[in-house]
Amino acid sequence: MTRRTSPLATAALGVGLLGAGTAGYAGLVERNAFTLRRWDVPVLAPQAAPLRVLHVSDIHMREGQRRKQAWVADLARLAPDLVVLTGDNLAGATAVPATLRALEPLFAFPGVFVFGSNDYYGPVPKNPLKYFNPRHKRVHGPELPWQDLRDGLLAAGWLDLTNRRTTMAVAGRSVELRGVDDPHLKLDDLPAVAGPASPVADLAVGLVHAPEPRVLDAFVADGVQLVLSGHTHGGQLRIPGYGALVTNCGLDRDRCRWVSEYAAPGQVRAPAMLHVSAGLGTSPFAPARFACPPEASLLTLTPRAR
Image 1 (cartoon, helix red, strand yellow):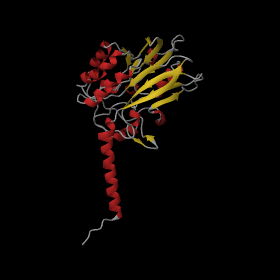
Image 2 (image 1 turned 90 degrees about the vertical axis):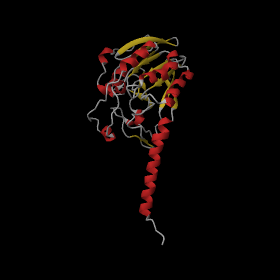
Image 3 (image 1 turned 90 degrees about the horizontal axis):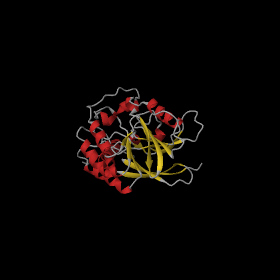
Image 4 (image 1 turned 135 degrees about the vertical axis):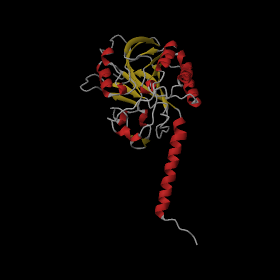
């Protein structure tokens, strides 16, 4: 006697296999498919020579992630004019030496940094549905040795822009830089960096880990022309044709990764350019990406049209 399988059971089996295959791809393949994005960003004065900025964010490094460490180290072959690191570098208390080793080849170039929540606190298991509730209570993991990471970056000559504003020479140009601590943890001190952008600088750049609109608004209202951030992971799990489900901040879904224009409410000057990195890592408790591979970005800053 031949056993017959009902169409419903066959469909359920197919959906189950598809789901298992997708989960396997997201957890084993895509989260290790490190990708270099290249963008032309028009923010310089007319006829200015280009500047090349390497933006690295959300590494979420663990000690044993040798593939990721080698990929980050290999970014030095790009020879950028400036390296920008926008936080969430660590995924465990033992990850500082591995993170610094991965970044070491990039120390040959000028660099600046701000930190994110996963530099200060380790990740903890959480219900992913909490991300759909912006008022959910945040639970911090164990404190991480962020001071050791900061000291290593400073020893390499990179500048800490945590609630700080400065000007530095980059490839012969004067670049004004301002950064704030992580607004996701409400550590940002906007008054410490507030004020109109320098009229004599060739470019004004703002750094923030989480692209909260209140910080972006303050930056661009002051005349910052380029803002660099991370935090969102680009949504991490995206639906093709729809995009990110959540951003884990106040920024709209359409701008939670890559390059877009951003204007503060009532702004009359030209919009600033915003680059949100989808980042290089994941929490060890959610080690999957879908339709959103891990990335770093090489931004070629070019003259603006007007």
